[in-house]
Image (tube, rainbow, N blue to C red; front, side, top):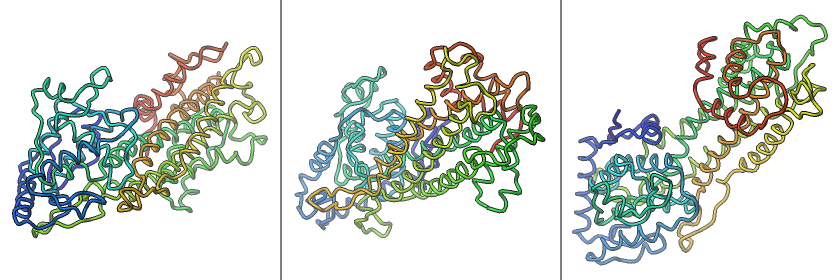
Length: 511
């Protein structure tokens, strides 16, 4: 597979393929032509002597400072060096690769006034598996992701750092030389075009969208398994009860859970039991309302990201009629709001999962399951402390769900007096989703333990698939074991596709 970048942009699947699949990237002839056309306009403006921001002037609060023609290339190099001012641990490779591809996309749209060789330089880094070392701190989300993008751009100059194969920091000059690549010399406006934009926060948001879509489906799976293990009712998930409140995500989630509970001897065992609770607790009965709202939030975020993928976010921009105009399109508010909204939704999906875990472990509410799902409670603690871990993660997610995008700190001598904090919003969203993975892993393990303890009554096909997936490393209920490795492997089951695939073979494709 090769991702070919057109002047019309790329799609989310392209970003995932390059970020996580290391596929090759190429510039289309149309993209090369679009960049050459816009560069000719910039060259003409520079020759005319007209003052244009970023071409013949300084940056930010120095926008009124005129730069002599013979120093304009120097200006672009100085810009990259000064703005590569991040600090902290390096961002994950997948984020940096996605960010570089999105910057290629931005340049290839032909509104940045750069030579095609600049975009080709980034393409070469991607194709030679050279990943810049981008520190986690530095971006305020306006003027876009300046510092992170500068840490990518400086590698093109043969300066800065890259991530070595062992994860250690390597000098960029050494990495370029080993790959047979030569450093670039920047021309007027090109340094600015390399760093102005929302590519970092959009990269994280696109990766998060993909992860959240999978996790929200797996949340339906773990909710169904927990409901089955607790002898819950399937009636609240009937489609006619969700058609009267037509939120599409709720209907999809309810349909998943209802389908997963079919053909279960455990469900059949208590369906007509007069002692059965008339209503299950909210954490069971309202699972589709919470997970469904999260799905609808995800749909909103998808629309926002799709719009950004076809947007020109540089500043200044070269218009097709020859004008070069300043914009505010680099401001990350749309992405910051979206990331914060999705973090709130994901945090709640994890919070309600933890409540179901707590019910499964509580002998007064679990409907005849042993305390903490241990057949020999007292000497053994079962999953008691796994629920402690889940509770601590829920607390952290609640802190992380506080929006970053409502904050702003003025910078650049009050020229950039309102910033988006979109980078911070997207970064903490990824942490929330990683935490959600852990919460669903705890629920999966607890639900499987509950189903095992209902033997000899057999669970649903989904329950049997989950037991088959976990028993090779989690075993069956018995004496306590070292639990951390079991939880780690349960996390891998949640993030992987095998369990969902096995369930869908036994039932039907899940929404």
